[in-house]
Image 1: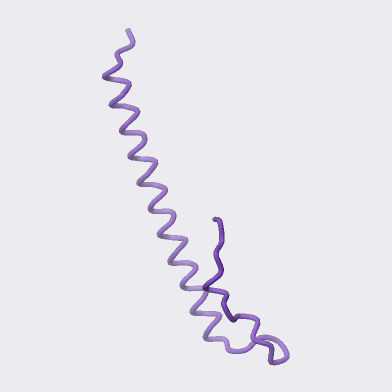
Image 2 (image 1 turned 90 degrees about the horizontal axis):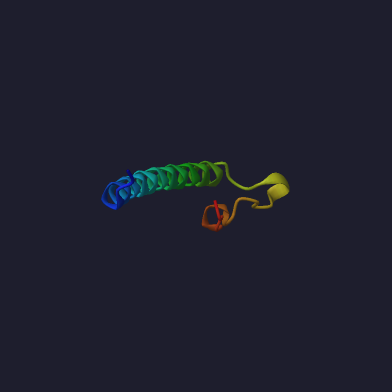
Length: 63
């Protein structure tokens, strides 16, 4: 038989697991963005002297 207390506990545990996974993924993406920004900053100006990398690590991305 369906028990509301069992369902609520299981649902809460799934929500915590989902939040933990999402937080970990966000942290990994943040580290990767910082690594890319450091690499681009270390490569110097872009093609033909244009600095194509300026502001690359400051850009907001929805992902």
